[in-house]
Image: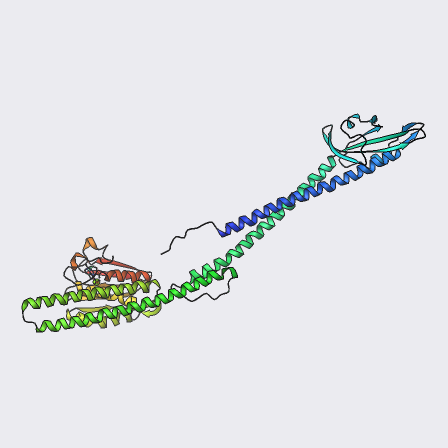
Length: 455
Ligand SMILES: Nc1ncnc2c1ncn2[C@@H]1O[C@H](COP(=O)(O)OP(=O)(O)OP(=O)(O)O)[C@@H](O)[C@H]1O
Ligand SMILES: [Mg+2]
């Protein structure tokens, strides 16, 4: 029987989601950090070139004959050449008044800044970096403040940036894949320890209650400790139950047997017929309670032993022969013959106490419900599967009840007047099922009941 366990989430999923979620977040952070760092570096590179270029233009400015003379040096513009052929614009101002160049540049620029002033602007639908700087020219009779505004579009820069972004994205993706792979591996490894413990619990036989001694990770130690303590308590409880059943069987059967023998002896001495009837009823009641107590305790013992079946190699023929020998005196009292038909030996692995109990109940039924002066046929065969068959020459099972007679306390209508508790076939069925086999009830065509145990 397996009890359905209520789940609340999965450790594996929790770990994987946390680790992969963290990896995705880290990959995104990495991507944005690399990209923003690259933007800063690329921008400061362009700014340095613009600064050098504007400086060399300002250096070329001079006052001659009272007017500004400014030849744009070739080097100042050539250093702004880029692979993307970025466009360059300039404007020159004299004391804040536009002098030459591209007038649109002047509109939004701070006139007369101190030092170099950088800004990014849209020029003719393109993003451009603008630098503005000025220089005070001192002539013989006048002072002129020359301002140069220089702009360069950012096509090359954005190409570089998109390449860096692509590489950063690829790098982030590789990082994510690697960390995701590592997360799966780490999760499998961690959960694997739990799986190992689960396997070693399920691999054990039902009566294997030894404590777990294999080393486990520290975090799992409390679980293994409680498991070991549970096993210890279970073992103690099993031992107590087995002792209790054996003790109870002994304590119930012995006084009942004593009472029965006293009642039988008294019956011999009593003369009055009404007293004899009372004594007979008393003996019958004792027989019934003795049988019921015996069968109940046997059933309890079988339920208990079947729960943790002990399997040992045994010979089914030897087991049956022993049983036949022990039951022959009882059969003789009813003029019944117990006939065993079997090969020399049929080896089997199982619990001999349980198997003998099951077979005893079947022979007991055959003797109880079969007619006197007939025989009970017990046959054991070993072809494809092991089969034990017990047949008699009685009236057979009541046809309409045949499917229900193996249920607990179920007695047939033909059982009226016979002592019994309706547990014999239940015991046989439980024993056979515990050994992985099945029981089959049938009626013989010529009359008589047959019970087949297939193992
Ligand atoms: N060989 C048989 N021939 C005819 N009927 C049988 C035979 N064996 C069992 N039965 C029927 O099946 C019923 C169940 O049998 P089962 O052995 O379980 O109980 P029981 O014999 O009545 O009581 P007990 O627990 O003492 O054995 C019987 O009451 C009887 O009606
Ligand atoms: Mg019976």
